Length: 295
Image (cartoon, rainbow, N blue to C red; front, side, top):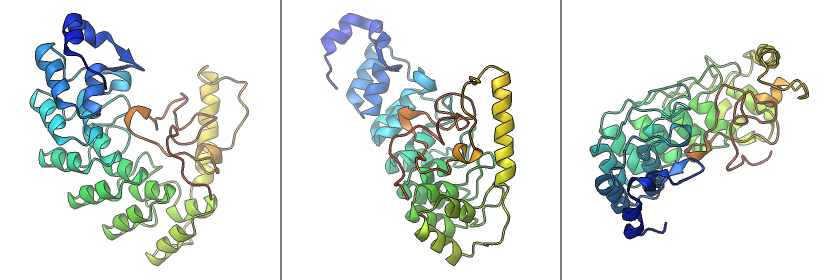
């Protein structure tokens, strides 16, 4: 990041009007862990540590992704809101956990932030497991995160780890008491793995851990529910009627081009009708960043 104090000083508060894709200079400095730049922007130019950028992102959330504890601590000491969530329901803990920022995750938990808080996008554990972050998954579990927290009946930490082919996360979650039969979900992890194909190792692990292969699932009820929702969306004018009718299986992500939800500036998984929505007709769960390997 190029930085010139003279230019910044000449611009004064106007420096905060410069944005790229909705992200301002303080957010950029925080996301890179540039502590001195953050100090200058806040202390000399009056930058607001709780200013929101695109999708409600705060500098503190940006700093959490950098992995730099000193920058996170500074913004927190300057009044950064540790409990604030972005527009997709992710707090600073979610941002740290799902990007693998282990030291920041530990620091935030040491400050007493609730490990299982959920503002609509699942807990930090769900997000970490869904992003193959076994180190932060372990940290969260060590702090008594609920291994069976469900997200809207669709996803548990174990399901998220399964879809990402993260055997390490799956083993950690099962050891911590993760329900291999997915109680509270529309479909069991075993059924999901079987339908998608290419999950031989994950199926073996689930069966070894006691997964019941005879539990019926609610996937067809869920497909019906999605079809009804899409029809209602068209009626409300939020989905173009020209879209081809699609199978609920595609919306569930049960197709080869499934992409995982991501944290950071990607801002995925939401229950709406946008291009990054779980119910969007032409995508599966989340915005792509790093694809799950094809079966």
